[in-house]
Image (cartoon, rainbow, N blue to C red):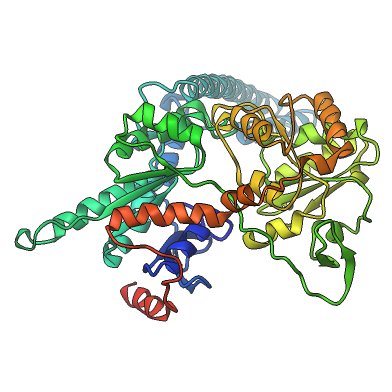
Length: 520
């Protein structure tokens, strides 16, 4: 996995399911520092985080910067400091001409220095204009290239794909797995190449060595929202990387039916990818603590501070809507903040993953101040993946205000299920998959993406009849919860390994931990 794994609930939950089924599971991620860490997870899986040395990516950046720093050699380098010194010297010499003897020779020397200064100033102007011309030229070139998705080479545009090879490849070879589960587009190439190396490493007399590769598509890569460094060319490069390797993997799983259909059609896959939704576990029925706020609408007694309303210190009865997830421009959280002046008395809690101490959160804080709702917007640290549903359930409704992007049209994000399985009605923007799901299940309202007035109107409707939107069908709750998705994952691995992969066959995991440490 091309991150540190800690906040990736999907990776951790899938690892726990497979470890519980008796498989030896090692999760690889990138360390946040320069040290390798090996941890035994509660599920029995082993998590290894490796130092991330991005030699290929950084080398590309250095070469790119050298090209942009090059200037015509005849003009030399920058000389603004030299001009300042020469000008000060001329002023001093001019003052000397008004005193003392030897005015003639001094005057000649002063005229010579004036000529030298004029030449230096002319050279400085040429350098300045050259710098402006080169910077403008590179800015135009970079803008055109960034907006050009065709004829893209992923090794040249996203060489970090090879950095992940140097980080993970040698470790995968030493672990000698039967199945490599590649999460997201960053590691699919690493997995396919490792499987090929493993097959070649076995002597022919022993027969073929087959290592299976599962590709877990977390999103529709060509449709990733464009902002900041996510330029059309950057996205096209990762899409090309995925396209080069996806047809040769043994199994594809993804996060929504719409993405599954799109992947099968665009990559001419032999079978429809398996859909494993990003859903949470059902919340625990009780939270036993002595100091309590009182029973919630499920009859569950929640301890002070153990839920979102307690964390904020907001009394029951005060309307509270919540957003839980990453903080980027395309998440549309600003739409909700702009709507608050039209929703008197309503509070908004933003559970910022991975932290509320981010520049994106500062932008939202400023927006809240600008529209005069600072006292009604609360930014909170996240809780652990297994605690999210229970933590959020004392809010009144959950929101998913995503802005329009091709990938968003097909997404069913995990927060949709974290909200609904916790008993929260939802207010979602009109992305195609979200709109279909919410309309079919009747668990919320849909508003026009980016339209704060429509957000306020639909939020008013939602808060006015909360009980009519709650997800209460026990069968659907069980299927939508992670227990239903776990069964699908076990079925995928049973087909791959041609053996039973059943719940509850796991081991303690201590031997796995010792084995991994020895191999590393």
